Image 1 (tube, rainbow, N blue to C red):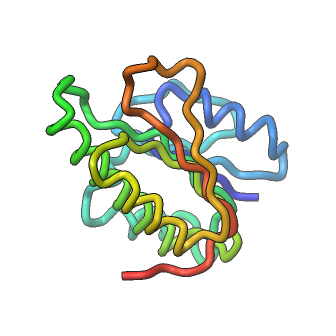
Image 2 (image 1 turned 90 degrees about the vertical axis):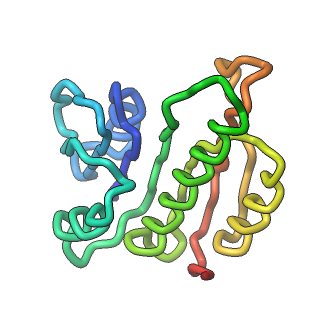
Length: 160
């Protein structure tokens, strides 16, 4: 199994994934922040918004497709919803583009997004490219926080 962790710092999700998939699985972690080395996890200091990001990841994984993409990406928070939500949506769109390029048919994506006016549109959109989705708000997330996770199962196809 191959798992890609986007927005991996400080590495907690990567460690959890590595423990779940075991010695034979591969976890590849990406973040713009430096992560201290974690045994069994390949880390790259990269910005997923750069034009060459997909080329870099496909060069690393070759012809393989990944089983799971985990995205805990978050923009630098200003505290102003009208600024933070569009930045979160931009990250969401980038993760979906990455899914198109590297996620296996029937793969899974876990993705953070901030709720805003167009939230229902993005839920509808992701439900067109994944067979099943679940919405999850962690207990650790503050009640007023717009942060929410979409767990999308069974990647089908990519729509433009």
